Length: 206
Image 1 (cartoon, one colour):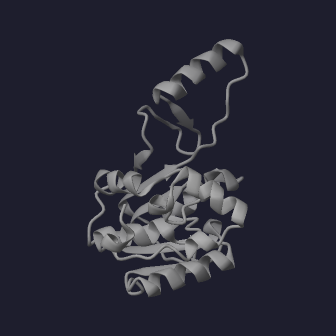
Image 2 (cartoon, one colour; image 1 turned 45 degrees about the vertical axis):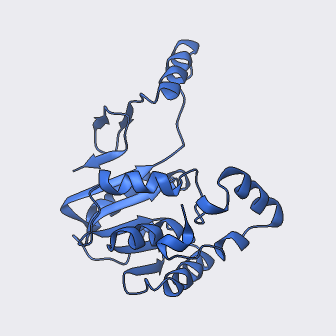
């Protein structure tokens, strides 16, 4: 992805890590795909995610655990939508706001310092909530889901990516799950809603 073409300069985000981490990031993503993400997503992944979730100019997106703001700013830049990020780390919020301002996206984005378990938003605010590989830091996932659903509109979508799985304990189950993971055909049961995600995707409409 050409940074000049999308009009966002992520080079400052590349300097946030230690020299060793920067080398690791460069070997994983390369400079052209490093948008400050803290997961294995890439700009191409987000380019596929945007139409899949139906993100357009009129969409108001909530990014739960927005980190340094790279993916949120990328989505705002690509679609013209509004994005609000909630992040518990003060440095992450400061960096996100600076990135948005320097990219001319300050009016489209807002980054808030706070806990996603108690968000400073009113009910029925967002069309879409996303979370990119930060679900594992929340011990009370039931509480998180309830809080996200509170701020979503009744027709809203809650989409999350998480690399944290609880593996079965028996050898038979382990073999079955290893095969499922390799084939990307995973069924995850969510006790939060009492329903199953019976497809290998992470889009859940309520």
